[in-house]
Image (tube, rainbow, N blue to C red; front, side):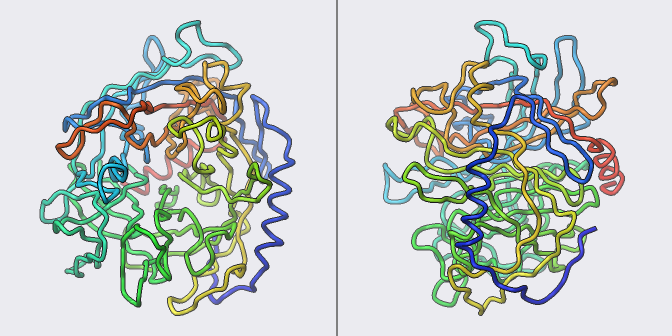
Amino acid sequence: MLRAISGAAAHRDVATLTTAIGVLMTFATPLAAENRVTVGGISYVNYGLAGVGRIAANKRDRANETFGSGSGMAFDAASWKKTRSGYAGTLLLLPDRGHNIASQTNSGTINYRARVNRLSISFKPVPVGWNPPVGQEQSAVKATIEETILLRDAGGRYLTGLDPGTGVRAKAGKFPAMPEAANGRVSIDPEAIVLMPSGQMYISDEYGPYVYKFSARGRMLDVIRPPDTFIPIRNGAKNFSAEKPDPQGGRANNRGFEGLTLTPSGKLAAILQSALTQEGKSSPFTHLLFFDPTQSAKPPADYRVPLPTFMEPDGKLAVASPSELAALTDTRFLVLCRDGGNGYGKQGEAHAASRYRRIELLDLSDAHAGGGSQPDQQQQEGQVDKLSGKLLSFIDLNDNAELIRFGLHNGAPNDRNNLSEKWESMGIVSALDPNEPDDFFLFVANDNDFLTSQGYQARHPYDDHVDVDTMFLVYRVRLPGYEAQRARLRKVAH
């Protein structure tokens, strides 16, 4: 069990820690098609890619606006079943705050109504070790948009992707002060989603950073606020804007709760995309918070967890950012981590190759919660509290030996078969194999930033002069005990 402790832990030197982690990650043995990670006597296995699928970049959702941006993903596990040709089920795919129009206006955000898209998914996997049929390399996953659920506040008004600027909606009843745009709508930049058996949804965002609870029809029911340390502060006041410069304290710009998952014991776990501003953006750690959704005002347990590092082409050490989180147990998680700025959709061959896109296994079995810095404590760059947990590399999305089987690659040529920049969501469903009950399919999807030459959002057409499809990569994995943990969660949730 996780054991929380109070008080600040001894500070460590970030430069020394960063170098040590960087050397370890840089010279690690390249992942083979089958990769096995053993923790506490349990072996988790990646058998490799089992399928790829696409949704066209110019596809429109049920609200007749450009679909895309798989920032968060949640399967309806009860819908997942075997079919004559493979599998089928229902998937919720969460877009973020909408198309970035910085090149067309003075602002990078638009009045995009926040939403969740419900998709019908069919999946015909390629058997382990086989190559897909010629001409069908990227057709294993087929998706149909069944419904677009627009998110609303408690009063029924649409939520918006507009940057809130200095706007703050005052605390009212059980709802805390929230980011509010100039049009009077709550501002949200959605990044991750958890689907409850009741159909209710928890969605984490970057503006707050908050975790919002919605009904199955998209009406706001509750808001979970992190400790004061996480709230962005400028000039001594709350300021939820994601525009430059970074706040003096709290979450950094566009570095909110990127990952969200539900543990088997019923806790919501949310991971921040980087260290807090006052802790130094280059720090190779972040915060993993555990909230009790039944007591949303209860302070969370706060774990400072390490992040992987990698070498940039210029020889500088960089920190990979977490983009999604999936609980395997109460103490073990899959964490999707990546670099930023490279991949299809970025101009020029120099930006073609990603340096780091991996799914890590984060083990907190022996970890202790350390508690965040107090709001008035401004930590110096290079000073952090004791780190908790350990990381082990599980799946390398950039493995060209695997990608090439499906007509894909990482790096030049920078064409539509080069992986796009941002891979941000994960979903796990059973292989429903009675002979291998611990086998599952791990779906990974990208945030394509709504990049298309035939776009339409917020009543305006747009042309990005490039088409980046929404894509799914599906891995067959062995996760011992995962089904039993999910059964435990279903019992807790009901």
